[in-house]
Length: 276
Image (cartoon, rainbow, N blue to C red; front, side, top):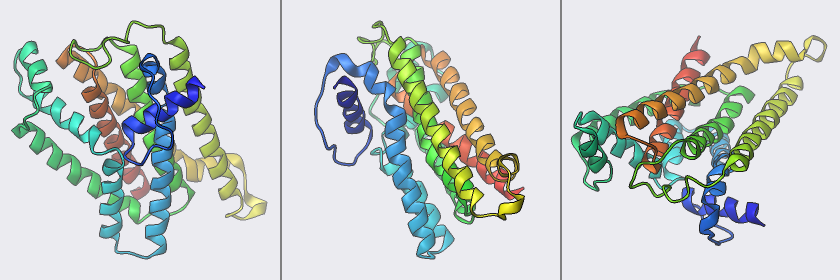
């Protein structure tokens, strides 16, 4: 029962879709974070359906690109963008640590937040234009795993690192969370294995039967999304480490910062790799 409650707590907090089961238990905050990969799977499944529908309708590439980009931010109520902007405002101010922490929780929008937001949106749109022109199982594999890995990585960083004094996670950080961390890793492993397995199965029946091999399919079709997803995870780890050092700890804003950077890194890598 705790697992179900924690999953729907995560749904209600991190997805704008109506939550089917509204229940809150303050003692399950860490377990809620552990279900961020499953929240990412909900986001990812709908993103894949949107990408498929847009291609099916033969809409202009730029329309497909803006729809794919807008969905990724809107489905979470622009929460992660808010964290991205707040962190950039604080970090780029280059003020003393206490002042950076004050800026981080300030509700006013600064110039650095606006400038970095513009560049993020332009970069994501450019990537989506490239990805909207691609097709096949590799693209859907990437679309499915990107939100899962970005959110899973951010959730693990929140659980693993000491929060900033004003963070909403401060009260719960000292509680044992080995099982919560394991639950998050297991979910990501299951989703990765299932996604690559399904992709290999689809490829298996879309190429010449007599010449098909798992190794060949992996090398030809699946190494590109695997490389891009690796960049996604590494970018998130670098962004999280940098932000924690600049701001003196972990917070929900930094989690959003991590998600935005990791997804941008993954999309940039995927766009470059499919163009090669």
